[in-house]
Image 1 (cartoon, helix red, strand yellow):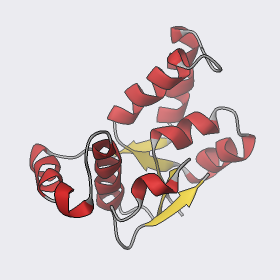
Image 2 (cartoon, one colour; image 1 turned 90 degrees about the horizontal axis):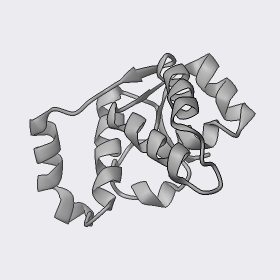
Image 3 (cartoon, helix red, strand yellow; image 1 turned 90 degrees about the vertical axis):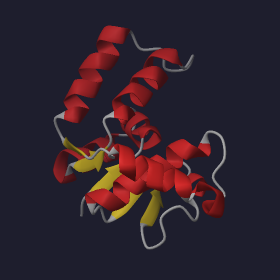
Image 4 (cartoon, helix red, strand yellow; image 1 turned 180 degrees about the vertical axis):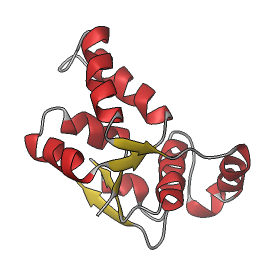
Length: 130
């Protein structure tokens, strides 16, 4: 099974050996923008606070196991056209874009720390809390 990993799942993977094994054995999908989200979290959260060099090394290793699925301008704009009907406002737009990319990738599941972030955003897509 190939899963789509959001940034929170990839950050969690850095401290969860079982998730690391899952990424190594299964691979996965994500968006290129997720790299920036993971870097921001790894270098900015007080309880993690990795150096920029360590974060870059960690992300490079992750990226080697991922397939990147990005949205075109039209796909983003089409998603935004549906935002109101999906209850998307403010920062939840990032979840919407992850959900759209997960569907585009053909992933079996979307992995995240908070499955509520994706409630109703991608009907038919399994959302798995890690």
